[in-house]
Length: 73
Image 1 (cartoon, rainbow, N blue to C red):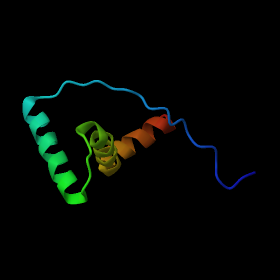
Image 2: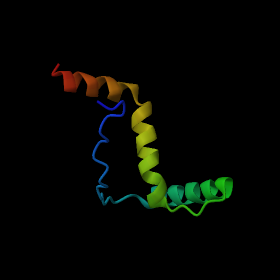
Image 3: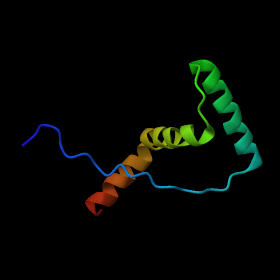
Image 4: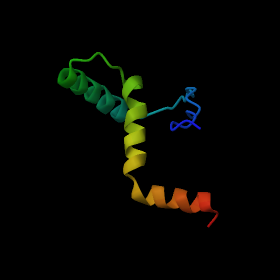
């Protein structure tokens, strides 16, 4: 058996959301600062998945509840 396990499904899933004007403005500012910082040309849609992943990974209560849910408790 290979040391590397089979890769998980990496098929993108499109998600459409509606956000407030204030959040849209803040995200636009974030992208501007991100691009200035890294010399990149990212768009909001490029950064939001990484932002959500980072948020979920840092939420310890969510991680515990998810683990409990998967264990059936």
